[in-house]
Length: 409
Image (cartoon, rainbow, N blue to C red; front, side, top):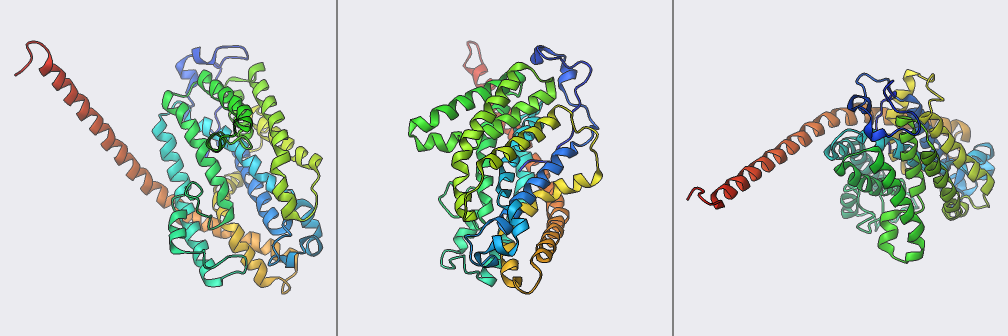
């Protein structure tokens, strides 16, 4: 999930298309303090989350406990939209590529680690524990209680449960495993130092690996390269480069090639959603939604939405992550309990409003105070690491001095 972001306006020293971004003055490459927030991405993030929510509440028909498995009949108008709401995930990945590149620019790799820990873990831990308690108490029919073990809950707290071959407490967590692998890949660039050349090279190498992976037959390579989702991250990264240094033919080529690969991958990605919706989905509609997602983030990169500044979008962006984490299992239980007792559209509206309120509570009383505490802990850990490094360097220098001819006995 993309982090909190601020808008970087290119300064008058920024190079135009065709200039060498790595040779511009240092002051031109650094972001300026006090920049206005990039609120358009906040709005897009909320739109993506609501899209995923609409898929789980109105698009799925394979879950008999939800609307009796008759979503298309009970909420037909909502189903017409919700059956394509899962594409919000692809929009999330585009935004994530854009924002992670932005947040790493000019900063050491440890800042990427700190920002991800602070942004992701507090709300995630609360969501895992809250959802687990609700599932234990309610025992919905779609959850095998024999598999809802204490060990499984603890494993989910790592956020790496997919790597441990442990099922997610809430199925929506699968996207976090994809995001984590992207962060690790980009951390390589951050460790070397984020520059225009290195980021372009990163995009090129990753895309070439995407082309090789299906032919390799190597599960580990598929796990690392993520060919189905990589085009969205790569396009998002390239769009941020457009935003930072201006569009040029190379960046247009990366974005365009990413779109071409993404449209191919959608043929595979759409299959489980066809099964979930219980009827065929229109591939032209799928491709149109993906294209609109590309254009929305691209428009942000090119400044098409610079006039769209509304304070409420900042709050919307803050609520997106906890809303995403909490909505599926808890929402399904509410729908199961109240189906037939309340008008379905009124139920959908009330449930969405209640979850947004819950997301605000998590943001206000968990994420914000926990972020301050985690930053202090992590900063103290980094300080201890720097002290240890300094001590070891001094120790090595002393040993070298003693080993030199004429050194101390």
